Image (tube, rainbow, N blue to C red; front, side, top):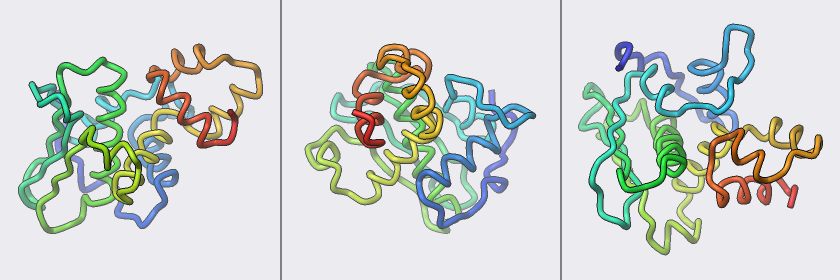
Length: 178
């Protein structure tokens, strides 16, 4: 259940995806000592901001979407109810990236996370930004590197971060670890 609309508390920023994810995690997830409880729960972060997240019967080519009709309207995220829970988690984190980047836009907000070829190819700058944000929110680079250096396996990392095998493999690859 939402704790109230706190969207105005999310800072406007020209931050990189990594900086933006860190800022959101520190503000809405980390404990009082600044530690990150794992796995990070993007559903809870959305709730703390005041964004409603709803599983929905979406077309198979859609993972989810975020929508806000105008700057004063509530923001909502919908995820494909047929997707596995770890896929839904990444979709929510991805949509939070769109929110962070565009929350102060006065126009309506709307992004659709498609499984289309263009989206999979990683050529749309907006989608690349949101994917990088989601990866950093759920799998912080510093922690991934630390745990990898300590000898944690891919499977153990996947379980600790509660992400899919493709997500952790992409993260390890993007960090130059595999």
